[in-house]
View (cartoon, one colour):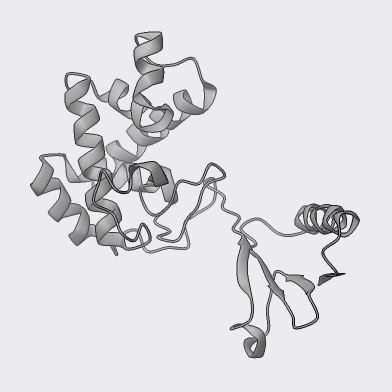
Length: 201
């Protein structure tokens, strides 16, 4: 467990250096927890004891999309089905987006700040009527609504709609097609692969 006493600038540098060194030796999918005690000392650990669970809060959540999900991929099928019927989007496609975005982790937060099952950015919460992005129903309904808007904007072209969901519609408009971003290209491939798999279940 890494500790730091005080919050001075040199100590802050030590904090982040320690955290990244700590991350380097952790196994894949290890979450980092942190709490500040009554003396202002910051404590970091990847395995808080049961007695200290209430004190620790998630500081960094690590996820690996290449390994099997630890989350139940059928748990949200009823919500996905409801959203699919409401907005006229194929349920297996929605499920594929959830898989690619969060791997069915309702508490997922990306490095850019996207939150929840469908990784929705905070600036879209109000527009999509989302009060709690970590509420599975709100997140799936909001994410499906957003995807349907993109699908209609790009005239039912699935690849462009997925590109817009990942990179933003402005980028798709700018390049008049799929943006030449490796992340976006790989994202589309992942979603389409998952879509085929879920359709065949």
